[in-house]
Image 1 (cartoon, one colour):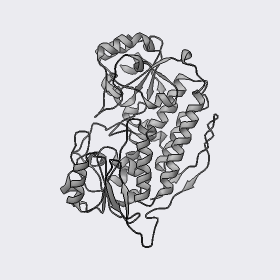
Image 2 (image 1 turned 90 degrees about the horizontal axis):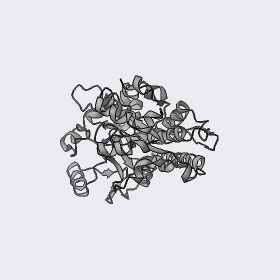
Image 3 (image 1 turned 180 degrees about the horizontal axis):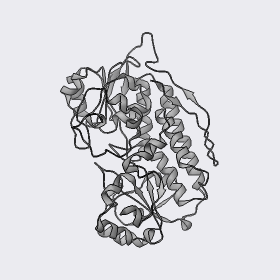
Length: 387
């Protein structure tokens, strides 16, 4: 499967240019010696780079990461959650945009099941995996003993990925890409994608680096997915998209010790309401907020509602983190909070650039068209939007 990749030059004017292509299938046609790789949970696994022709991905986010680096035509099975042709499957993310699925949906629909998948599936289904006859398994189950046992049972390498706490900006993501590149002889794809992410990070950070602490607005991020879709009460401390864009997270100063995505009590949300200058809500949660009078009362009590400063970002988490959308969301956060510094950023353009770099396809139109994207990045029209 061909993936067009872009070599990107991002500066303050958001100059993104250049285009390249990667080859399909295994990069090495001759004899390749086995090597030992250390996977993302510290296991030593013997693999033969570029030799695999039947790949299975299991666990939240494993197929997504493989889709960014690997050859999707080599897949021998997918979890039911990623096969939209099935009537019986986990459907909590139906209508929520997952770009890796959008890009590869027709391929996924043709493949046999390697397990149910979904947030409630916390055990690999060995019999179903064996039924797909893989010669390697890419996993996101992070239990060392269970991964070792599964590898022994299957008789093929099982390599484990990891997302980490910072999403697209986490070192674990970069290292997972690098490992996938080594195992599947697609090092150039991994290097290029990691480089793209780094350049985007530098561009975003440089735009907002000069904003002084005393001049910052207090911003609330709400509705982040966590084991399914949520409500405005699911937020995050030390939220890396805000850190990269130099945005002040109102929850970072609330006195609580939680870090990462977590729920806050309704009383805590209400108490912080007058400090919320700006609110960004995740699209995946809106369906659970609309029409709920109690939730709308919570929102109406915030300064952001009163000042008409509530905005919609695309789904951050949907069967783990949409890494490309986390990057695009970071640009959007900068555009919302610092409009002058990000005035040249067009959200359709940057979405297309990013999805092309990750998946080889420009997907802005498709992402906006999903029911629970509500038309894409936007300022929310309050009463009309929520009713």
